[in-house]
Length: 117
Image 1: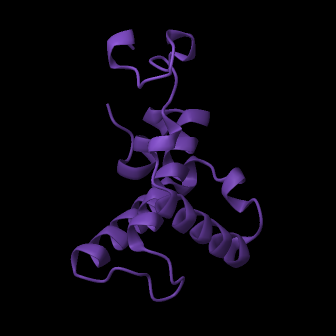
Image 2: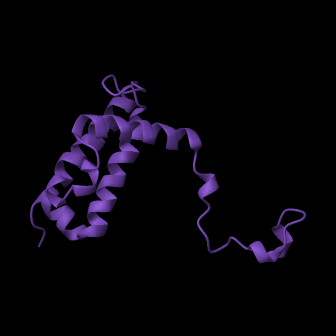
């Protein structure tokens, strides 16, 4: 970050150019995601999301598509969980990301679409 664009009173010592800008994350979305995680934990078991394996990939992708389609059809909030559908999509993308990070992207795609050659 150039010293020219720093706010008044901020020196280059606090350079954030190579650090994640977590303050930019919407706190309302984070709250909704947390509410969705709490609902999911109550429904599926506490820490259940931490043991999801590649075999859950198809189920998670289906859930992403259901929530996104409901939102696009004009339903803002999930009737069952009372959580915004886009927050539900974000939670599911988080699960899919975590599975791919802990196993592999190829394994996730193979599980969803069959082995890709």
